[in-house]
Length: 94
Image 1 (cartoon, rainbow, N blue to C red):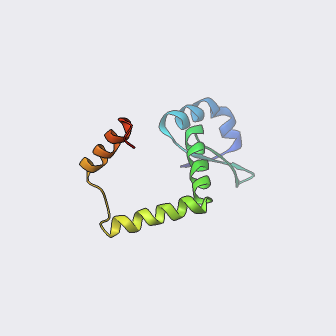
Image 2 (cartoon, rainbow, N blue to C red):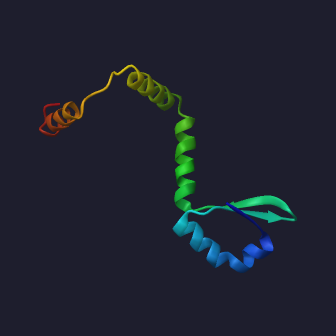
Image 3 (spheres, rainbow, N blue to C red):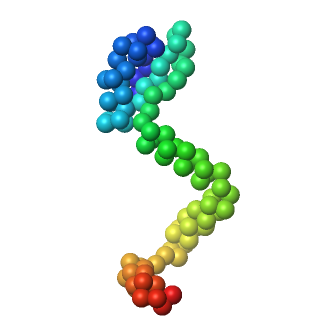
């Protein structure tokens, strides 16, 4: 992540936007020497929003915790079991 002053960002905006979009670079833009804004890709912003939404959903968090506990306890399904279950559901069995 690079930190650049806003005056420099203004002159390099096309280049910065290209790097953010293509390489997922981040830029902190300063104004009067203080960090003021971040330049990140839309995809990364949307991913962060989804993560925040998930973290604010108590039911989803409980499900994630339960999944981790199940995995740690070895309470998992073999790939063949999952495939058989999916095939059964696709065939309308349920």
